[in-house]
Length: 177
Ligand code: OFO
Image (tube, rainbow, N blue to C red; front, side, top):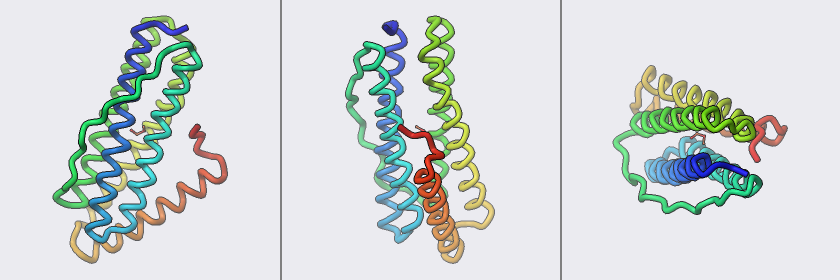
């Protein structure tokens, strides 16, 4: 059993995760159009992860006798000024998601909902990793600039990120459900 307040807050989080998935998908498509194959792969990978985050909450709600609402998703932006701008937006969005997870944790305490508190620990950890990852990429782009040669290097680095993440996932290190 879950309180109405907690159920509503988790449904809001479903919306946010779903939007993140679409947002990163739009960014992946833009990067692909700009010839940034590695960045596009990375964002596709992130988009799938966000969908998984959404589904994890979806299943949790059903497990605790709540009602998971399939969200309407607003159209994300389709055009971006630069790769730096793309990752700036990823970082900003991840910060917003972290804040939302923190608010959910606060509600758990108010509602004495220790099941959901336990469930959310995975998200707390995941957001720390994702925020850190987005900031690292952004810092690198800022450092080396986003001129032609730098972009080539950044794109290669992105492919490495994806390969490492896929290898970790295959080894069962990620914990995604
Ligand atoms: Fe859903 O992990 Fe980032 O946003």
